[in-house]
Length: 463
Image (cartoon, rainbow, N blue to C red):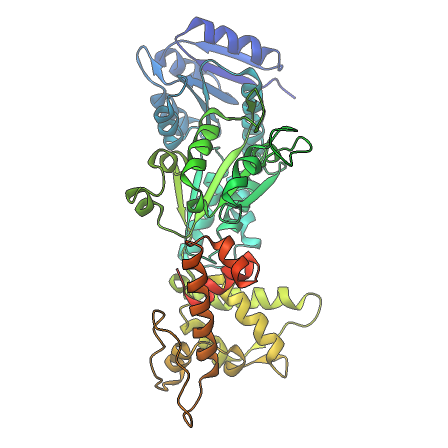
């Protein structure tokens, strides 16, 4: 196998020499130049497996180099060299198409890991091609609608770099699945994928959970413990419901992302961590920034690239494919249940406020309740509003969430499901208010699990 080559572009002689020596010890051939003109000449003469470029050059900028390589050598990853703490430059480089960035003074351990990851990516792209990568997501990301085709194409592109990605979308659309596919299709696919629900960790335990702690650092710390950043080393850390992070933790998370290092509680030194950050929330993060509830600098850092996952009502044509896929999964090795034409029509007409997760719940419940292997409209037990839309039957408007549930007068028809739902809604809202909207504390008050509370919040439409 021929020796892999790296192009280094930096006007500082010391940096060129440092990178040449370090990369040479990794058995790489290095060409080092100091200007954009010299870089153009080198790229015209040969192809490179990786390129490092400084952000500021005597006759141009690193962004020019990124654009030049993207146009003529799209399979070559580019890493930007930035001044220490220059987050804006790093973010701009990633948005321009850089694979990753390294800060001066250069941490050699982080540099070597970046090089290994970048070279692995370049080799995979040249051997398999981008088309194979793009189609690999079709197994689990079900749907042939235009919005889903666009999501698949975007996933394939995002898998090729290390830029932080913010995945936006309503609850139940499959944001974690999208994050897993970005991870699996990239050079970190063989590394760990660590998902964490930021809203499920008590505030007082967050720093220990994210960064770890040293033995004896606080009461109950009987041994050293690795945090989530360390557990995700060499892979991806997925911050789900990132909007739930308290402000004090947002500051610490921002520093960890910027410096690519963490300090365990009770530890003296920072530990370098090679982790890609993906994040998601169903909330409007921009609105939270304007309201002062989410730090603008952290939002700017995690939202280098935004990927919106469409709700199910925007891709109704995918409902038959999704329903068939889910029914086959639920059946396992057995014979899958079938939907009648009327049942399928009812599902396609339904708005699915809970999206794909709600479709899964509806079908699982239908399989449990129907008397045969054929699911009809009554077996779906869709909310009355959806049922009326498909059958043309009028119905009374639902009770308002703000009003307390009132028992129906004696002798009147009882809509038992609606009455129980209103009782549940009132109890949950009361528990949330008493716990100052801390979902973990509210679940404890109600005597249910956090997961069960989240399901009920979605089911009852409580935001």
